Length: 262
Image (cartoon, rainbow, N blue to C red; front, side):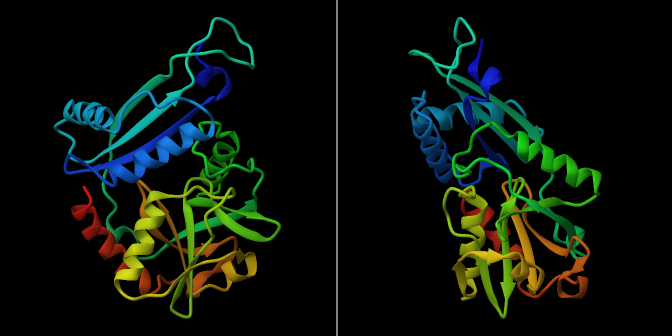
């Protein structure tokens, strides 16, 4: 009985592959190692074995130049369903799915989102598979025909159900600081680097819901969605419902980073 299935006692990563190459391989493996360490699962592979195994998986699907790899490591299988555990051998599961890279022209009108209270646990910086709250938020977003749910704790905006969040105000890009209430997104770091490339000021600060709704631009980022503009939140239009001027710059630079870091 695998504890990943029984208890969600496992961690995961999603790695985008462009033109057959993994984007930001080292940062993803570093985060995987930190997640494993946080819940005390021994890392079953060296970085080199991870790279070799992932590349073998990619090579099984040469017809798909762009792939999304889901990688999960569970604590392992036990003989009975007890909450406690002894020494177990971690289970490694991987799958590859084709996906289409984001196209700027598909998002020039922006996307919509809704806000909800953040009811998740207080260690969101560990990428565990216990995602029931996230799943419920994602389903609510689907039912409301919006891109994602923006989460708030005590009126402070944290992130989305499956993405990090940015706002732009007066030419400066803001995002919630790293810590237990957000996932330290790999794409989040690349987006900040893209802004830095244009000498656009960036700050990691707490963002209130009022700040969010008064922003000049709002973006979300994730490994497979890259960086997308949000132009409507709840019933409020952001920038009069128009994509702002900084997002296209950051999006274009992100495409360059994909070629440099794959």
